[in-house]
Length: 240
Image (cartoon, rainbow, N blue to C red; front, side, top):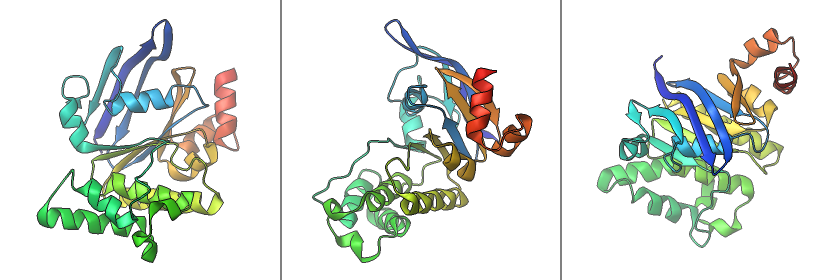
């Protein structure tokens, strides 16, 4: 599999604060890749740079062969980005919201296909025609994931995608993400939930204080560090 995302020696500073300190990793086509670490470690900043929302201070990021700094318009055509605090227009129904968002990408038959795909992905049954302000957190998150994936991006970028969800809704959200990759979409997600990442990701990069400390498949890392779980791997890697 070829690399669809290459992050090379990327840095991001805010004044005198260096939030991301020369990180490098790559994501292969069709995999679920997790960028994991504690809050404030640089995960969200990295995702925003990949998504062209923040300028790089140094280094380079290539998405499907396009440089995020020099060809940001092309990058935006092949990605979708779902931030942790994403919201929908709560006065609309789920169906109306998907139609509104699909209108930015397509018209005619392609528009109808996109909306149908979004409705299928959201899997809300009759509640697709209820107003979003009546949805539970889990229902709203499923709708937002559907919105992010229905344009058929090459890479879907998701930040803390199950944050605030209960056990059942988090499980259902993970199943949706697994099904997305079966349709050919590469998924890059960030999380501080080590259990979730272990269940979901083909490979991971662990980030701490703006630096990548480990990269690899979860099972390989657990064997290398003789650890029962990724949380233990992380602690051992950080503390040496």
